[in-house]
Length: 124
Image (cartoon, rainbow, N blue to C red; front, top):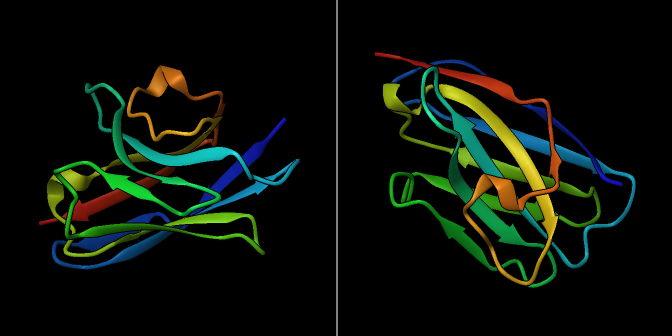
């Protein structure tokens, strides 16, 4: 069993930056893929970025490429999402998710473990 706790959300002006953290407990994450998803009001949950824990290979949605970077710290069992050049359309609740996988999958229902979410609001 893996427990995930996100932090780092908040209110920021357009063009600003935030860094989200997702601390995992319960076991090491070797063999896991860890991803960030987001969900805006009235919209479906969408994939943002993922990282394969052992090799640190990453994949990001086109909407955030060049602005968001996913990374991990194996010693802290923590995954990060650095968000730069934020836009009002990035406003959403951001969720950390994990699953045992060799590949980064973008469908939310592929993931077994979820955090509680952290709100990111970008003002124009």
